[in-house]
Image (tube, rainbow over all chains, first blue to last red; front, side, top):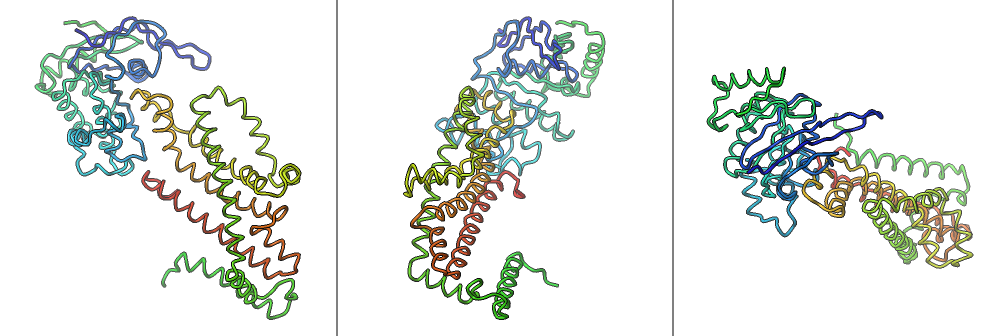
Length: 242
Length: 254
């Protein structure tokens, strides 16, 4: 059972009076408990797709079947923490005052490894820590599906690698669905249970790396071969179904 | 060489002015009626403080400012919340406010005397007119300058419009609101003294004008000094509040 089904999604924006079709009949499925990576170059419509999925934009056409909005979490490209709230308050931001169980927040602080920084304000955190807090804020609402828009793109190599490992660990623990948008092929190969290549406003190729991300060797033969076929897929876009 | 502290720098300027004042008086450049010597002014100040005249008038002026300023803050809250939650109503009043904003409150006093007499009401209205706009405009710029990045976080979390206003836009605007409060309080303070000089039977402005009609230049200068000092203190408190609100946001330099 797919928890996310998108059929024939259409979206246009007018730029300087000119209509630009960003999404052209896009189809997408994402399964419960899987990490679906959407890979594409900048400007191919990845962010627009996520913004439609989380309800920030309305599609012009097509159908969407998703979990209830309250069960969808979103992690933006920027951490977008509230600068006047400390780490704990930011993590509990989406919960009402009544629902913000202190033990739960403490658990989330541990999950994303921010112990000792509970009382720090965003300006006092490093870039990676802010992204952790933003991830914890999305997790606090216990989403079935979490949408992530190039969340680690602004981080340096080492911090990004740590965050990717953390994401895989959290995903293993919580088994929520993840739709992860990136332009980084290595990141896609490392994280994805399913990799969808996006170009020209649609999904032009689908790859299923096989072994779960945790058992995958990012430098192994299989990963290299996968990377090669993704690269050729970005060139002439074959549909390599299972 | 040891650096001079900020407090000493401030004190130094005041001491220099005081010294010059004293020298000019001793040299007899102007008559003591035009410029009474500093000693005389401070004696008068102490006497006025001792007799309760100063405290009474100061309290009356401060109370008027507090009342009028509270009305300004309330109006600001109502207007901004309405504009944020229901933007369609803004055109009904935006140009009216724009017009009122450009009328100097003091110029309305003759009309107010005619309509309301010289009681408390016209003074409160003058303070509201003087202080509403700096508070309102700064609050609006803080509220509506809230980046979409932050309001979208609320939308994604399923917040209602009013929850986005109260949990994101309003706290985000606190530093701007405090800047508006700081400017607005200064305007209110200046306006009340002016209003009391035109139509009042109490307050610092009245006290100064009354002293002038009695040819008590020393009392006039003492009153002016008190106005300046009180303004400095309230402004310092506001500046401190702005600093506190900005510090946690990592913008301590504001």
